[in-house]
Amino acid sequence: MKKVIEDVELFKKLINKTDLANIESKEEAMHLILDEKVAENINQINQSQLSAGQKISDDVARVAGSWKFIIIFMIVLVIWIIINSIALSHAVDPYPFILLNLILSCIAALQAPIIMMSQNRQDAKDRLRSENDYKIDLKTELIMEDLHKKIDILIINQVEIKRDIAKLFRDSKRV
Image 1 (cartoon, one colour):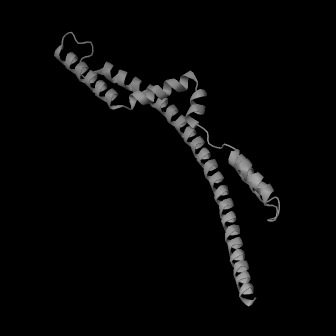
Image 2: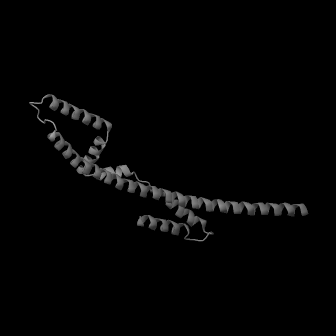
Image 3: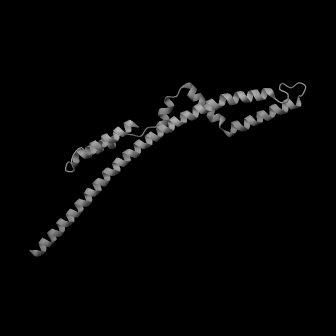
């Protein structure tokens, strides 16, 4: 964020370095700003910096947060309960399904931190995206300010030209 503020100050110094009479150097400064790319592909940058663990956490979060996973998981649970309820004398996990509770607790204990890691990474990615948007907005604002100044100069010049034409017209009527 500090770098962005320093960039703003540098841009403003470049634009306002000289007085209004010296438009060419301001134009050169503005073209330097226009030529400088500030937009970055955050997804590409972020993807290239991922460790194996981060990729796994994203995949687990993507799978565990889908309807397909929830439906398949519910079907497996129902099948487990039915099989162990029907086979009362030979059940692997008889009612109250202590083994099933242990398995579900282990899944929850592992899945929650993995999903939290993925969410933390998503937050970091959102911060990068926000900084990128700010840079783009800042550049756009500087360009708009410059265009506004140029339009003001054009309007002033147009008024002066109209005055000069009116004066020439009055002078030509006198002759």
